[in-house]
Length: 303
Ligand code: PMP
Image (tube, rainbow, N blue to C red; front, side, top):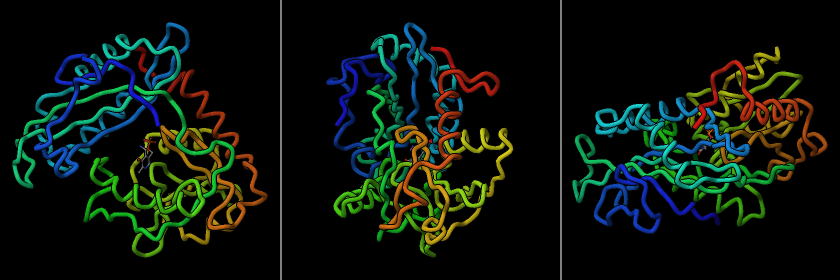
């Protein structure tokens, strides 16, 4: 378990974490009606940079738009968001890399199950950048829990309440002795993990579910696709059968809290010899480097 750093952004101010709370009668608490994003801030001495901050802000805006949280577009823009992050990082002065979680809560009191026009509050906190899955070859279990489809609760929107789906699948995987789950959709196609996107490599081609496969459109997924394309690696985005994972040459996952991390085993079957494959290692190195020293994509925002 990680604790937030002591200073948090809440109610347009930087305050003590213990003072920042959302009401018990708010839609955020009653229905899980909040949307969020998590991104890394890389710390090198006095230099601090956020990775793909504008893309995270845009995804937050899009989550709000999908769900109908209209007060966010009315009250927030990227400049305000960036200033809040700069102030928060300055207040906590981290000396190591951190993750930053920014959440838009619907705080209207007992509005019933509606959303448009409801009051919002933005919370932002910082915590240690500790990966949530093993980095040296994780073991995954296909889940008996199905991924929530786009026409029920869209995975494209990062809705807090939808993470109950992830909790069920992740806990089932842990209870069965695995590190994380693989969500399948109603037709048995591979979606993603509880909080990461998935890739496989077969005969030198990088394959990943396309964005209409009930996945989050992960920022690190996009990063890997860009880096792989620049390296001339063939890429296919399409539906994937579970059994394709069993016979893949390599499988890896991406996510802010997972990094680019190899998969050693799926459902009791070793992936190749169980060790990280060459493409996984190359892309992991490229991704790790891009987080700190990106030169030409405009991915780094100095804070
Ligand atoms: N899928 C889900 C369900 C997630 O929660 C996350 C983590 N935010 C990801 C994928 C990876 O997204 P990102 O690369 O933007 O961190």
